[in-house]
Image (cartoon, rainbow, N blue to C red; front, side, top):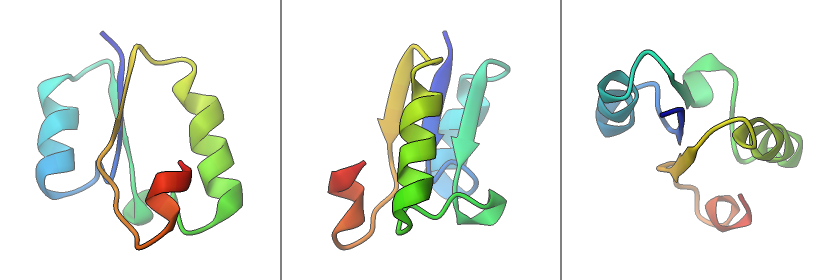
Length: 67
């Protein structure tokens, strides 16, 4: 199962990515995916279409609900 996780580069998000490896992928500020930027949110949304499961683990005050 292919799993995409936002905030998947550290902490609980990284644990999820590692659990579903090797078909999982984690996005976060550490690897250039800052969901505070609208263009990044759009990129993640497009990429998520290639995955079976999308876990939105990232949080920002307003932008996480826009993802």
